[in-house]
Length: 169
Ligand SMILES: [Ca+2]
Ligand SMILES: [Ca+2]
Image: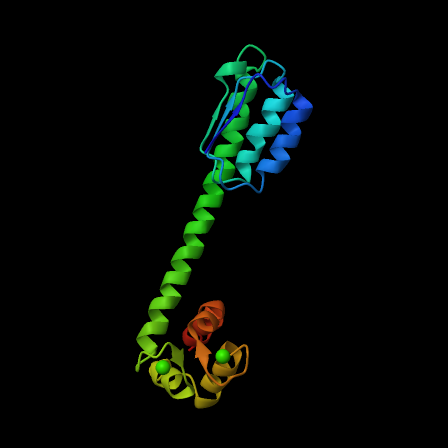
């Protein structure tokens, strides 16, 4: 969805309020700013939304270019690019850790019922060099709702504990 801000006599103050609303908005992908009331200050508050809002891909400032300095926009965009890159990278890393955990879970879940019992976990870790007691402790650690089985979600959440245990020997 493209949000068009033009001919609304929006001021810098209005732009700041709009920016606050946009921080948690996930349907706006483009913003067109055509209002003459917006200057550097208003443009800055809207551009800074890009640091937290990952849905907006374009802010079109052509309509208010006379009031907003190119220098400011350039500087802001440099900062935002860095922030966005960090954010995207972090999301990607979290995704790949999840995918890795999921793959390990599926390889240990021998009967494929989507849950791990204590036997499946100890069979999956038989080459790890962990003692039965250590594997048992890991099982209880992973089974966060204590129903005596480890669901895929529990395994993914506790994956760091699994890695740590299986690499400690
Ligand atoms: Ca199973
Ligand atoms: Ca459980």
